[in-house]
Length: 382
Image (cartoon, rainbow, N blue to C red; front, side):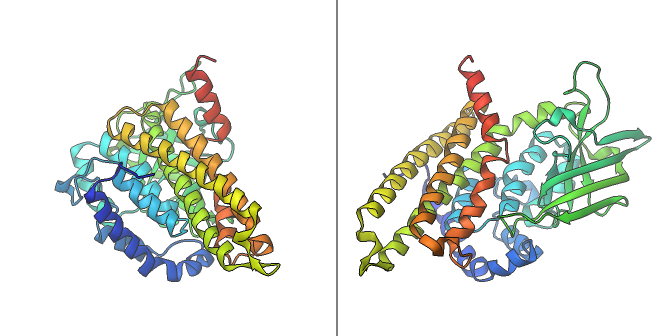
């Protein structure tokens, strides 16, 4: 079906992103996977092209755009090129909204130009070894000491940690008996600070070039002026960006499913089995017909959500619906496409194998499918 969600400006931007990814990233991406992270120069390139700062105000060196659709274009093109580079999404879709909404003027002047040009890469550290989705159970502490906070604790599963210059760390700054959600604050931590250390770049089954590391804080002194927003309001702040974070994941998941179908269409047309193209078998036609219909449904849902989000009306429950639907869709479609590749689908030199491994985590990060179902159930009165 014809898409109407993007205008000419979005499509010009898309052409630029597609060209850069095809020319600068696709040929060397296997090397990045082996290294476990993209090189720092990649982010500088994206900054130079205006990709990282498209929604940063012009006065701080950005593009000044308000529409999230530009972010969606980047997510779609990375998925189309079969590139697992969620560090970009964390920087632009997850961290930047906090810096735009909760920083004061001095903090904006200090951080936003670097965020826009790739000179300051960012990450956000919420998850701890013992908390998982239970953010109210965070045990990393920050104690006030004059004009500094003293930060102690550990985080895990932190995307982008290897290249990060600034990390938004959620820490407990006070204890409120009977209210575990109170007393959490966000500190913007310079990764060059004494006592800050990056641990293992975790070995994952997929997303090999998307660095995911452990962090440790040993009496890290964080300047008081690096407190983001007000003390004790982190849990409230974290809720404000959940809809966009989950929409970002959904956009990527749906685009990855579409890419899997395109890839498999090309494969079954070229692959001969029992003396004729694999595409000639009824089972092949039926499976890909099902996948094409599902992808179209996911696209309609994503596009409606993009319009709602730009209009300021995408609720947490609706974002949960689109995230649940599209990530589950991605897993179903990629699995069916791998099956059509036969044994070759299990060999890593074939892109569908990597896509299969990359797809599995989308039903976990940003809130598991079970959490999404709980949110949706509550929204319908259950």
